[in-house]
Amino acid sequence: MSSFRKRTQETKAIPGTRSSLYNGQTIASTGNPSLDHILGGGVQIGSLLLIEEDPHVVYSKVLAKYFLAEGVVSKQSLFFGSLDDEPEDLLKKLPKPVEEDSNTSSETSPDMRIAWRYNDLPQVNSEQGGQKIGHHFNILEQMSSEDLKESDISTWSKGSFSELIKKLAQKVKTVKEDSVLRICLTSLGSPLWYSENLEFSKDILKFLTILRAILRTYNTIAFVTIPMGLLEKIDEKLVPRIRNLADYSIQLDSFAGTDRETVPAFKEYNGILNIRKLSALNTLTAFNPETTDLAFKLRRKKFVIEKFHLPPELQDAENPQDDIVPSLSCGGSGKKSLDF
Image (tube, rainbow, N blue to C red; front, side, top):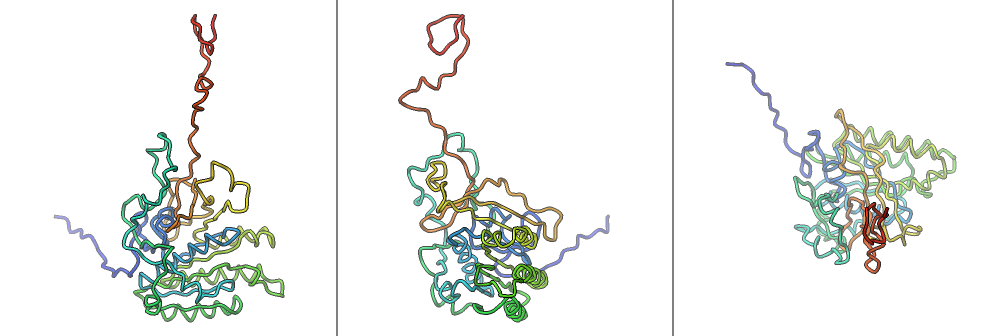
């Protein structure tokens, strides 16, 4: 009889987290099931999720609300910092949690029909089933003030990069070992962050480097939105350097204000979602999503990410004979055949 014994280690699960099905690492939800799905089930503890803002900062702010709302419902500590938004005002607009996502079919327009050749293709949407994490939210309704009062929330809305780091360092030391701190920073690097000493590029890179060190040390996750379009105009080398410091980088390429807004092929969506980076943190390989052709749309009650597909090529009902392909034949009177 073999003396081999399998060694097991019992660890107490942190509320609002679970082990990843892909690499066994501890992950937490972003608050949006669709975004969780393309990231491999959620965001890994100790990682930095970077959202490259859409030009009008509409959809990135919606995702930030999801992230904060998930922290409130999961009883996790929150730190929200911004120079562009008033933290208290945005916190009052967090979406309300719902028991289940029962509005999927009712929100689908009758005109949104998928061609038969797309019927067997899975949508990139966490609502497909499988093991889930996180909660569902209704963005039309606001979270109750009682839930916010019971939450451990710290805010920051004035100062410099160095002052923000000091505030974060003080906050992480107050978080218990069996809890998670969610750090949410919106519009980091907007014009309100520019300093007069012309050291902005160095300052933001230094800040992100220190932030990542904090994330690796404590049970924390960070959700940061950055206006990459503006930063690219300041220094074209700054964008790849910032992406290099992030663990996940997601770009929201909105159609609003562009020629694509009126293109029929894009009418079902609000923009394209580009995955710029997925890192392998504490594992050999990074999660590989089933597809990178993704689009997003803001429905009436939720933000959804789906597999992007072009509308089907439909035949012209008025001239069905125009689509007949010429063929070779040995006789007959068909106009579309090549006789000899």
